[in-house]
Image 1 (cartoon, rainbow, N blue to C red):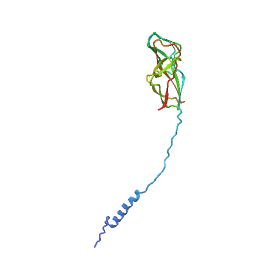
Image 2: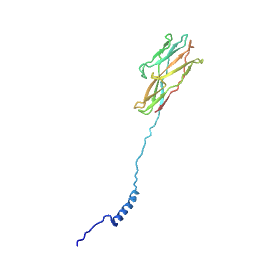
Image 3: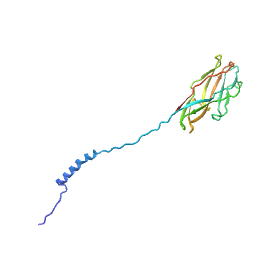
Image 4: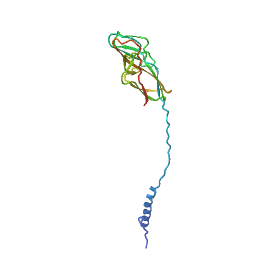
Length: 187
């Protein structure tokens, strides 16, 4: 008689091994590892200043019997260029050396800054309290009272300001002065 040996792989020993293996899986998933990473930052000193290097000057104006305006403009939008005088009435005579206001910003090189000029007109007056109004502020003859500018790699940037002066009919003779606000901020 021949004996045949059969193996049943799914016998009791297999099930015991299978149960031991399954029981070990949760233990493997509970193994954790941890590590550390590096973090850093550089804080840049953000000094920012703006300084007037030339006042805005509408020149010497000979008034006429009607109100008029004198507008300063920079034809080439260059902060160091010569200004053009645009008069609302050809009878107004402007002499002397009208100049745009010139400013210099000092800050962090290659930074973007916003320059903001007065949103409203300002008043200039003489010693007897006679007044004229300055309005329509613009940076390098562009319209609007705000402009974004990039500072050079050395942190400097010059720009010019233009405006319009309202001259009254038979405006009283005298030297008129006043101040205007300007602000510069990083973007």
